[in-house]
Amino acid sequence: MPATVVLVHGIRTSATMWRAQIDALEQAGVRAVAVDLPGHGVRIDEAFTLDAAMDAIDAAVTAAADSDGPLLLCGLSLGGYLALHYAGGPGIGRLDGVVAASCGTRPRALALGAYRAIAGVIGRLPDRGDAINRFMVDRFVPEPGRGDVLRGGVALDAMGPTLKAMLAVRPIEAIGRIRCPILFVNGTLDHFRLEERLYLAAARARPVPESWSELIHVAGATHLVSLVRPDEFTRVLLGAALATAPPPW
Image (cartoon, rainbow, N blue to C red; front, top):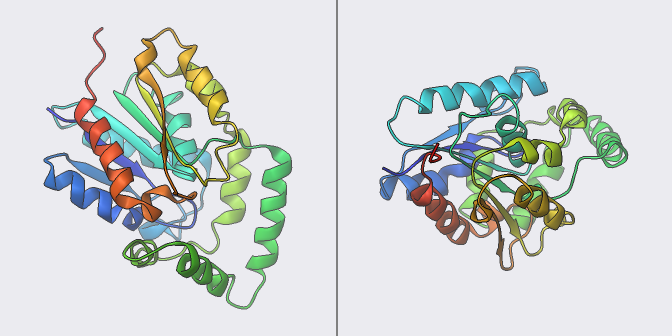
């Protein structure tokens, strides 16, 4: 039986960004569930904290565990960092596979501080940055992904608290604690793949089969790989879902 796939979105987006993947997975007989993180989507009025994000993912994993098949957790950008953090923390022993996309650089205080400062300036604009966000989506996300991103609303106030929470995320350490297959997926044009080889090395240093640690590049894709190259990303994700099985122990 193929895995149930739990999908975790990126910052300021929502579960609707996964529409193309959910449609394709379900057509292939794979159950898919997309999470709205606190401060995003239908939970936009809630405060984002790392603990609250872990609770949201854990609730989705718990609900998905009602099915008889294995569980695959997939996240993009913020969702990728959170997927690794969950799999190496609260979710230890609960997952049968992880797909971490577009999160190939460790969060660092200096970079996060700079992003928070920029977000603070943008947040003081009369529209709180809505026009800038929509311009960036229009410029860099082709249809139908553009509509999928905007359909769930834009979490204009999520940047500050989310970036602050990321100070506690240590992806390399989390990877070392994960005991199920990990697949890293990055676009070749992604500016967040700077340390992807360090991630892969950490995964391959685990006491698990080497085949459980893979890195796949999607040619011509930028940071939002699942939206910019949805067909290619979906093929990778579907392949992972069909190959995922419970550990042999």
